[in-house]
Image (cartoon, rainbow, N blue to C red; front, side, top):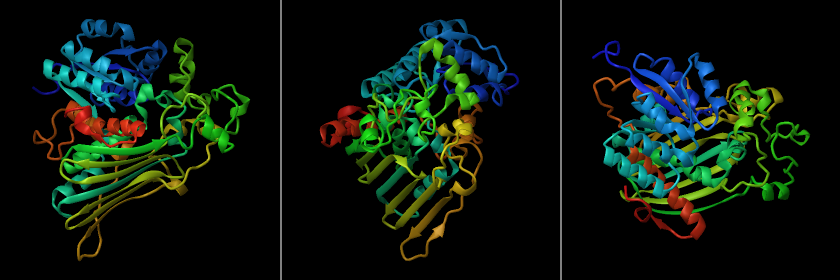
Length: 441
């Protein structure tokens, strides 16, 4: 059947924060011929109303405790989960058991028991779980996979992977709900599982042993006092002490942040603009990880959340050469003015004198270096968001299959978590962790 004659799939979105905008706009816009947006579910009614206003539709809104009622009453086929990370498993499992398929934002969940619940429910129900690993769809990451799969550098012996979050993007994790490890699993889970998934996908392997060291070096109240960066305020809005603080985000300066968070505070009390040098930060900001994979390859990985520039460097060492990727999303961190509060939460969009570059360089033995040319694309995550949405909602790719295998399922979601969860355990114990002792995937 064609999209015009087939029944549109009935879709609901749970968790209507900023990230959900990617999905609500896609479902109500370019994919409205295939998908019908029939329900919103959130702990905050105001945020649901804002999304309805943005897309120009009166989408039925349900409180979080009425999730199953929404599934029944609206006859939902597909649930998109964008809620706080620690709640993903609750919605995923209940949706699967109600006969729905699921698309979930990464990370799939935050700990091993929750991951097992999801895997068990998926196997028991036979329904589909897709994890929104948009970085798999970035053209330069696809080029990395194609180059490695071609055998251009031979068998992979090791990978070095450094990810830098600048003083805007990195700081943002320390002013919102992510700052509490119980909500997010820390940056190892919320952020780095993205990267661990890329390595699994690039190498076609799985983690075996993980050893890690990490701590809170830059953010938090203790570090702030020690370095003279602390300001005396709990949250920026309405606080004179936050004026002039380069680490403060002022919600009132951004129409988007005002609508989704500042104007919604009366309903749930959530503050999106907490002091990054205030108390209550329980996640790490500087993390080093060593991984051995079942293929025999090793990974050295480092995540820094307080860097002066944003981007990442990756090198693959092989039996026939080396492949190097440099992505500069910005070359320096511009001080934030009161009029650009929204830019505090954006990344990969630098322009002008702090715009970066992307370079993929192949260094084969006995040959001069050769740059692998990759066309740059517009859109979030290097064009990855647009391509991912087409895969999720636009139907099967041309030819009926994707030779790159970009679609990520619940097993991929769990496998990306294994490295992250093992790293968190290693932080606590100081010991190496066997991946299979945490989660069999």
